[in-house]
Amino acid sequence: MTLYIDGDAFPNLLKPIILKAINRLSLPTFVVANKKIMIGKSPHIHYIIVEAGADEADHKIVEMVQSGDLVITADIPLADRIISKEAQAIDHRGELYGVDNIKQYLAMRNLMAEIRDSGEMTKGPAPFSKKDAACFANQLNAFLTKWQRNN
Image 1: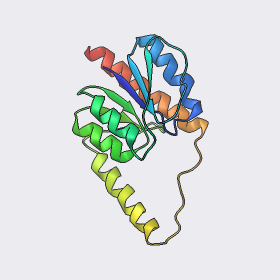
Image 2: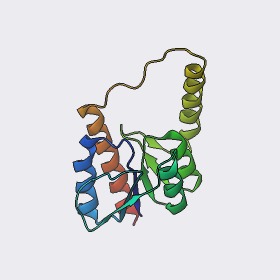
Image 3: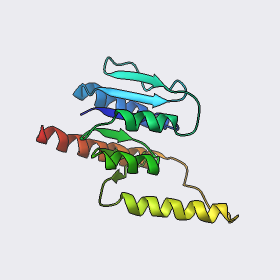
Image 4: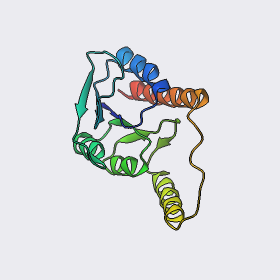
């Protein structure tokens, strides 16, 4: 398994969590973003900077990801593309996206975008918190533990 991190808007609170997991399991990892994002120093992490532009990092991740890989992203359309390639995705707040739930998340995201586009003011997500980081850490640990058992 290869780990991919969508580096755009990656929360600082998650960096030590993900770095510890990468080093503990020697996970080959690619951090993809349109600017330099530092997760930490590790021989297992490779940084890829893509050209500026909407979804350039997403396109690169989709190009590289293979079945069985894991992507860390808060981008629901990217998660949908990843799942169509038989990979997995976890968002920054610990939600594991899969074939069972991604279409529901995508439909809700698209509905909220339509509401905003019509001029309606909507509340955005709550600020990222330590509780969110803990949920992410728990989900990542559960995913990696299951992966280790199966490999």
